[in-house]
Amino acid sequence: MSAASWLAIALGTAAALSFWLLVRAKQEQRVLRQRIEGATRELQNLQMSFSRFAPDEVIERVIAEGIDDRGEKKEVTVLFADIMGFTALSEAVEPTVLVRILNGYFERMSEAIARHRGHVATFIGDGLLAFFGAHAPNPWQANDAVHAALEMRSSLADYNRELRREGLPMLAIGIGLHRGPGVAGLVGSHDLKEFAFVGRTVNVAARVQDLTRKYDADVILTESLREKLDPRFQLETLPETGVKGVRTPLVIHAVRGFAEQGSKIQGGSEKAR
Amino acid sequence: MSLVSSIEWEACLLEPRPDAALKRSVERETGIAPTSVLYLSPVPEVARLAGRLNQALRSRTHLDPGLADLTGLVVSQDNSCRFCYAYQRAVMQGMGFPVERIEQLERGFATADFGPIERRALEFARKVSRSNPLPGSDDLASLREVGLSEAEILELLSQIGLFIYHNRLATVPALPPTWAEELPDKWYAKAIRPFFGLYARRLFRRVPPEHLPEQERSGPFSQVVVAFDGLPFARTLREAIDVSLRPGALRTRSKLMLFAVVARALGCGQTGDEAIRLLREEGMEADVVESVLAHLAAPELDDVESRIVPFARDTVWYNQATPIQQRARELLNELKLEAFLELVSAVAVANMVCRLGVAVTGAREG
Image (cartoon, rainbow over all chains, first blue to last red):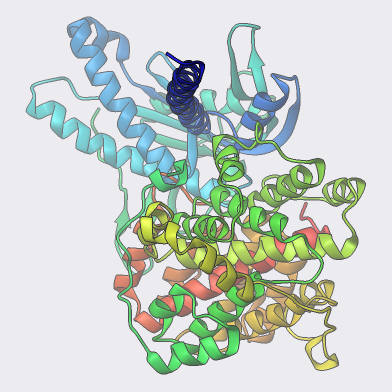
């Protein structure tokens, strides 16, 4: 073979090799791009999931700068809910059934809270702590919180009908509501942090929730919340009551329902206990 | 396809109602009749306003066109508006904006490769759009720091405001985004892209500075309007406010309540105070106004007002648990179509005016 033929073969081989390398590189690039897009999508989904637990601004700050110790003073409405007689219930049913009952309960209560622009901060055993106005400014947080409590009441009534049909024990809850100042920020240990609202307001809401047993009322709120409340909420003032951690007795009210203009009271108490 | 295109989006709440005369008139006046005109045509004044505010988006005096376009993309992404995002993305691609840069932005704002001016400007756009927390003088100072002039900052704000308006105008009635989402991947769209670029560049124009005539320097919310004096946007904003408050299927006081509620939700003091003053001038008693703002209700409200006042609040920050389009559909079943269209337009303008009001006056409540 002549030198020209050898040269042509060599050039052809080189061209084929280059073409093959180019195709490979393109394929690899495509795979890499797909992986990046997949990872980005996961990250974005994760970010969207996180937005249920902390304000967007806090999430973005964590992504950009890492976790910090910044706190912010806020006026927030706190809702604390607890299942009555949960210990007895937990001893009466199988563990798997108990978990199913609890999950169904938390699901329904969380939906009611979210529909009224609140967010569940944490589940504590059978208890639930939710905030209104902690993530975004909310001048209507008092009304939202009490509407959420009334929806929790009616959702629980529906859930109890389901439980009764299945021959399972029904649930009764007590809800305490209070509005006041506190500090919002990322709180916890190095390994475990959560966006929390801390201060006396949370403690008072928990104490008020305790009072639901004493007064046999499923939703009780404090005077500081009533002051901001739509007058269409039907309230019954209860005796002033002293609670631990608060110097003066609390003025508290049981919530009976909400009267729409020209209609009957909505969300009236349906006793399950 | 971006993550935005995976956002839940209802079937369009409105029927397209072609009105050839109206379309021609909007085209003649503004260069193009945007898709929204097809759906808003039962209230021609609202449709014409949408056309003019669309033209305002395409008219730039000082701002870098690329930055203006990116601002639209970022604000629409932030407001989860599939319709505006898809159209903005398609137009940018059509005009030759590098798709890699758009994809970078879609992969994440924090990691996208922006220059310092772009990054600060787009961060500011997100802050104004979110208004949680409200933008303040520090944010404006950070824009000056990177070299943006006062005129550029004002024009940037006007672009942000315009997208805030268009996002709500499209999101509330769920205008259909699918066509624009799929268009860039179609072979024929790719084939005609160079010609489209030429056509689109004629629609996006440099316009000279323009001062507000004396008679347009007063009127409702004039403190926001006058802040934009020097930009053609100021006159468009004046017109948008006037059209939004003009009585039609909804009364002026009903529309003012929408402005007052949006301002209260955002904590926008000056705009909120003015809305209250105007409501008092309309004859509403102070205690009724206070009840409306405290509880989004009052016995003195009529049936329509009782429904639209709480809805105005839902347009400020959408509640994921009760999607805005579901709420809008319920409302559409209860209102006349004309009233619904006026409502959508008025809340869109109210969100634009109140957010811009905070940014230009730095007024904050509390």
